[in-house]
Image 1 (cartoon, rainbow over the protein chains, first blue to last red):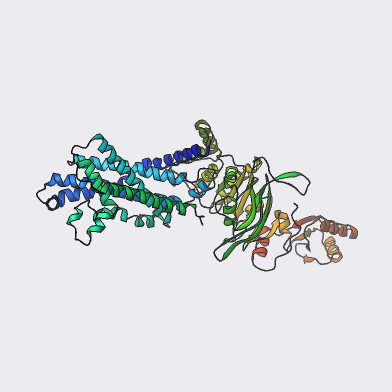
Image 2: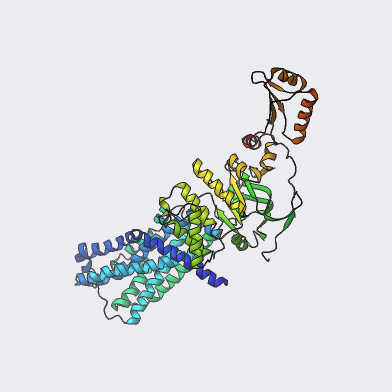
Length: 263
Length: 333
């Protein structure tokens, strides 16, 4: 077997392990979905009347607000799911099993690849689940073409890959799973200061640049454009740049830590 | 480097034997702290070697380095004929490691752990299932095979841990404190398992802080203290390093006792038990001279026993930081 097929085979084994865990302990994954689903229901049904008055220059009703908020909630779901990856990586790195893997003649990066691919798959599955809740309460895409749907999925997967690599880096940098969970908190808090719930344009002027240029807002605006036909503008490129940048950063950070001698 | 080329060395008895693990000048420090200060090891294939030392002596560090987990600062290291620094992947293919902390996946079942190992060793599905079933049987884990490992007892986790190590049929096995934290029964079970490995011709590198364990299992023992090997040899050789060994003669006839006590010098008398203790290292030569002496004065003891100090005596003598006795003989290379 050449080294590439060896790498693929070992990574596949590690991915199966990762998915087996998710399969055995669905509550761990589902817990992570509670926050975005609660946010969705809270903002639509409790704050909905006030919130809808603030978008589209007023005069919008609840169904307009559902359409507005769901793309943001979907990307928040990604942020929430990858917190699980940070915790899981930290758990793996602080237990004895990783030492066993390191002393076996397996492709070295396979553990990390297993985590990364597993986390992206879980993120996409989670987004589908939360999306189903969105559809159940009345979210409908307006005239998105098959190509736009494809692009939307691609964007979600790419965004999930970007946040996963950052989460993996956080998991490696943490001394224990609790610390990993804390360190990964911004991944679920950032959507609160993005255009997920209210348009960035309605925020105070000094804060607007932060909201507009943080990773979530361009991705949310792009997803909104793909599903609802709103203006994407430069957000498409910004989202792509953020994803590529975060992947590169997370990858470098994670591999540097992974290759360090364990104590 | 072709894996069939292994360095050979001549043993004391003249047999040509392959070397499983060798280290020359192994050094490692963490920051300011020197953990291993120039260690030399030479472990023939098919033998059990025990690295004995108190907590913090550097045992685990030595295992971590030889099993490619961490890099040494200096030293020429070969495991299974492969250079540890230059070709760690080849070393990994030859070894199995059971570390101090259980290296099992607690979230899945024992059987799934075994199949995970089979997959990582690139066994085909059928072969993987066969090996997993066989080892679960051998380690008495069949009943628990379908249960999550998080529900296992400490002894079961250790057994599973070792079973996982054996999936790839490694020829060299590192066991870092394999029985620490086990109850006496599990400990004896583990010993039996380790003896079983040896009879298959596997080389075992064992660390332990228990002297009886080293005594029980190892062909050769090295005592590690403060990052240095302070003594090395068989259990018997080590026991002869410290004072306290004696020959004890017991008599039933008080007259014989009296005449023996008069004839022998340097004896400690125990008049009530009618026994005499003569300081001795228990070597053949000393025994013969004692027997010759008894013959020459025409006394016959009813019982003669040789008492060597046990490894505890050795351990405390060697690791207390006091004077270190000279090595009995340089181990034969």
